[in-house]
Amino acid sequence: MPIRTIIVEDEFHQRATLQQKLEEHCSDIEIVAALDNAEDALIQTLRLNPDLLFVDIQLLKNDGVWLVEQLNEAACPTFTPPAVIFTTAFTDSQYLLQAFKVAAIDYLVKPVGVESLVAAVDRFRKKTAPSDAIPQLMDALDKAQVMRFRDFNGVLLLRDDDIAYIKADGNYSELGQADGTVTTIFERLGELERKLTGANFVRTSKSIIINKRYIRALNARKNTVHLSTPQATFDVNIPEAALKALKSSL
Image (cartoon, rainbow, N blue to C red; front, side):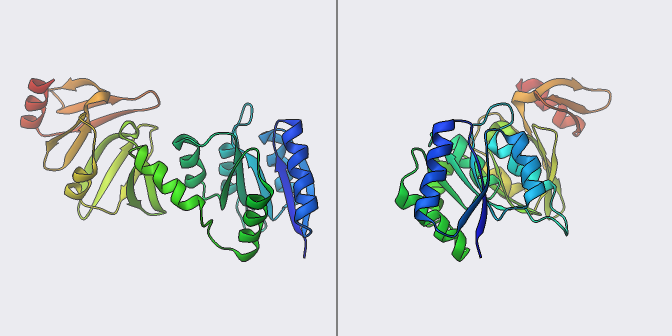
């Protein structure tokens, strides 16, 4: 059975070179489309339902991660998102983390070598994890000081600035993210406190940790802290004594 494949790469030479290498060295690859932007790639992937995508992360307008996220959201009984192999000219933690978060099966650095390309396709055939990309991703996580939290979907990867507050919720915790998302974390507040590395985090009471960087107002009448990030706002209730102590520390 051929592996029906779409290439998404905004540079013509890179796109043509990758297509040529696949045709010459991976005989079971059938390239059904070669596109230069994420928007067209989304439409064609939903229409053609390929097995595999080669996607450049740094596309114009919407990037490769956006494309994969849209495809994952479109999953249904009649559409299964294809496997993804990212290609990029960059190797810093920002792009490695993006690849990790959307569960790419591999990550190839341009110019893509024949040996690594063939190995990535072979891993797709065998449905195995990328043997050399995973250690690279783990190294990037450590260097980027990314914290791992256990949530309903598996593992949530966050930096200090991604967290607005954490509130105890029995044996679990409620985590308010800077983008406005509120997530249940399967860890107690004390366990989470030990993970936090930034100096901006303050435990205002037994049940709440706040990122001081996002504090914009303290409301003594309602006993709330108003947090504002570039993407969202939160009003967090805290005890009166904790509010007074927080006010004195700011």
